[in-house]
Length: 194
Image (cartoon, rainbow, N blue to C red; front, side, top):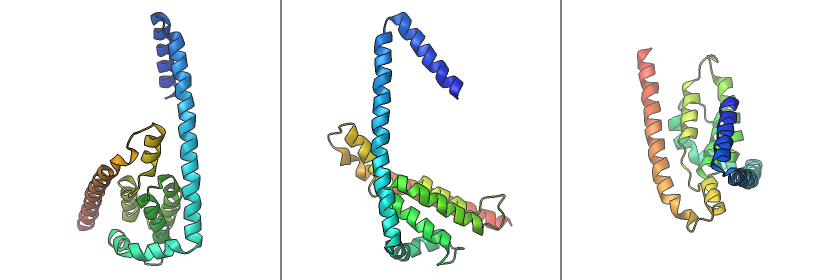
């Protein structure tokens, strides 16, 4: 991959040299680097904020309350997990973070949840049904507040950064419904095959 990037940069510089636009190309590269650093800093701030809030919510017992509220959903999605297992608690924290659009804060919770699911996996060589369902939930999660997209739109100077919320809800709900339905069918087909 490094060779591909190096080749693209080299070809761009050679073409810019022969077109007489080398100064503009270098200036655009520097401006792009500046924009990248600004975007990373804004994401880092959002990630620190939400990660801290998740830790406070966990310490204050808010995640335990959310776990009870989400129990009907998690019971349907993960029927083989016991109600009080560590994996289900971590899955709930991850689902809550994703619902609130805290994707960056959801990542550490997701890694912890996958680790807890791995401990319960009877065959560590293969992913369990619960692990696969969890990946599906993370890939096609519903975001009530898509904070990363909103932050990007605000940073880009959008006139209406919140104008995408309803389409995001529709798209994410449709994707999640289709993904969970497909995963449930795969689990059922796999169970019938045994």
